[in-house]
Image (cartoon, rainbow, N blue to C red; front, side):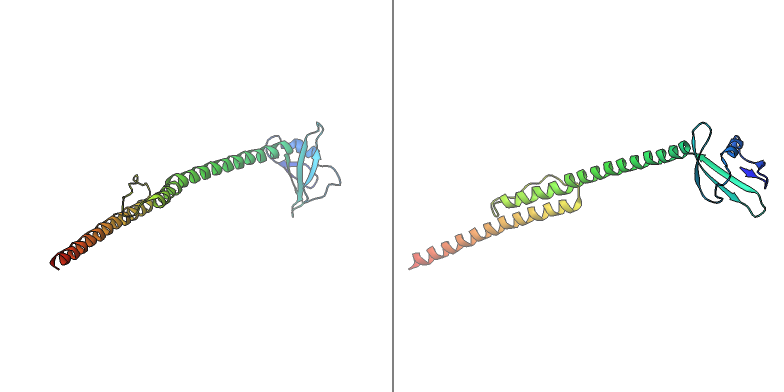
Length: 168
């Protein structure tokens, strides 16, 4: 609401003239104050004196301000809920695609009879987990090949020893 030096209305938004009744004598200029209208409705109001002697009166009802804060609170609450939901999905995915397969690999390695069996894993969705599975399978396969080579070496050694013994 724009007022002249004698507090007559020069301009303002529609219905703003009722705000003029809120301005009482002795209210400080340039400071926000809480005032009550005749019906008991609370307003936050500020009056500023301009250089040309005119006044600007701005007031907003407490219900209007609280409605805005309430909307902001609802948005904040929705944001927190959405963030928590995304976090839950992220943790679940991390567990399902990374932690659970690595735990399975560890259990398989602990129970593996090296040189006697090759573990079989399900295909992994993460490349790195698949590579780890491949390395474990290759190591187990190499251990079996080593055991076969060792058995062959022992067999050849025993045959050579028996052949040498027969000659004597």
